[in-house]
Length: 165
Length: 423
Image (cartoon, rainbow over all chains, first blue to last red; front, side):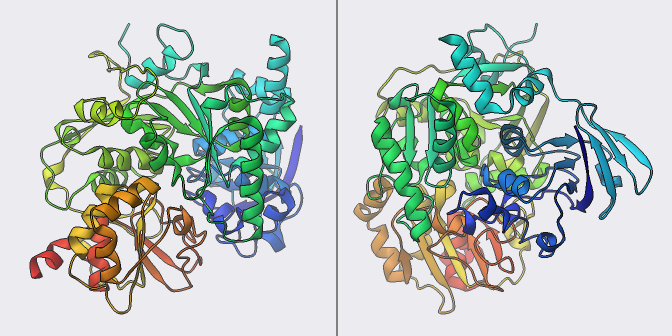
C-alpha cells in the first residue's frame, strides 16, 4: 500500500495527554475524538491537516497513558501513518491493533515540517519527495505482520477462537 | 545457558515453557484482566465485535469505576453505566462508587493480585502490581477486549534492567523520591520496552506503600513492568488478603540483565519533577521560589494510608496557606476509613484541606481540582505533561506527600524539614 501526504513534525516524548487530552475521554466516538486531536501541542494542526497526511516525530512518541483514544483520534482525523525514531510500547500495540500504521525510522529527525512523503508500507520505504531522499523503516517482526494481515487484533482473535472450536 | 529474571520466569510459567528469552513473542495466560470507566467502553465494543458471548472467566475480569466518578457529567455517566451493565450481564467482579476506590490501590488491597501473576489491564499504571512480585502491564482497550475473550494475550519478552538501591534513605525520602530520581537519571524512555527489577537493601527497608509507588511509575520511564522481589513484608501484606494460591519467583543468580544501575540512596534528597516531564527532576534544595495555587495528595501513586500519614505528620496543628487550596483524596474506601480511625481526616479538615471520596479525578484533569490557565499545582500524582491537570497553560510539579503537604502550608514548593522543625 502506498501512502502519500504532507508532514506534521513534532519532537520527542509526544504524550497521549497532548494527542487527546483527558478532558475528552468522556467521549469514545472516533470523529468526536478527532475534533480535538493534538490541540494542546499544536493549535493549528486541525485547520492544517488533510486526509493522508503523516505525523513525524523523534523519540518515544505516544508515551503516557494507555488510552486507545489517542491512535483512534489520529486515525480518524485522516493521518495515514506515524513515523518516529521510537514509540512508547502501549501506543505501539494500540496503533497496530486499530490499524494505524507506524514506522520506526532512525532518520525520522531529518524529515521536516511540510515535507511531502510517499510511504510504501510493505517495503517500509519512506520517500521524502521534497528533499529527494529515501529512508528505510525497521521491518515488523513476523508475528506483527500476521496481526496486521489478519486485519487487526480483533479479527486475529476471532480466527484463533474459531480454529479452536 | 544463562538463568532467568523474575519477569522471564513468570512469563515462561504462563506459556508452558521452561525458559523464555528477551525478544521472543509468546502467547501468555493471564490471571487477571481489568478495565475502568474510561477504557472499558471501547473494550466492551471490541469484545462484542469478536463475537463470543462470555468472558473467559468472570471471576478474573474486574471493572472499576474510578476515573470520572462520581460521574462528572452526562457523557461520563453514560460510560460508567455501560461498564456497569456489561459487568452485571457477565457477572464480573465490579466495584461501584462507595465500595471501591482507585483501581491500583484497590486490587492489591482486595487480594485480587498475587505474586507470580500475569495481570493485564487497560490502564498504563497497571505496572503498580509489580510491587507484589507480579508481572503486570498496561494495554489498550482492544488488547483487553481480546484478553477478556480468551484469557490470553501476546507479549514480547522484555529485557530486564536491574536497579540496585544501596544505603539508607534520609528522613522525608520515600519510594516516590527514589523513583523520581531514577526517572530523572534514565529519562522518560530510559527503560523503554524493558522490565525494571528493583532491589537492594534500601528497597528491603521500604514499606509496601513505597514499593507500590515505585512500581507504579515504572511506566514513566517507558517500562513494560517494574518488578520487586517478594520478601517478608510482601508476604505479610499478601497473607491477610490472598484467596487463592500463588507462586513466588526469585531471579537466578546468573540471570542476564541488559543493564545494571546502582544508586546510593543516602545521597538522595526529596525530589520535585518540574513541568512538563516526570524526568525533569531537581532535589528539593534546588527548587528555588515556586509559588503554587493548588496541592493534590492522593492517586494510584500516593493515595495509600502511609502516604496520608506522611502528609498528616506535616499538616498537624498547622494551616494551609491562605492562597492555596489543598485537595486530599484517599485511594480507596479502606484507606479512607483507616484514615478516619487514625484521626487523619480531622487533621486535614482542621488544616483547611478539602477531602474527597476516592477518584482519579484531578490527576488526569478530569474533575475535583482542574487547573485554570496560569495556575500551578504540586501533586503526588504521576504525570506533569502539558495540560495533564487542566489548562494547557497550567503547570504541574510532582513530589512525595510530605513535600506536597509542606508546600501547602508554605504557599510555595518547600521542604517538610523547615515546616516541621519550625513547629
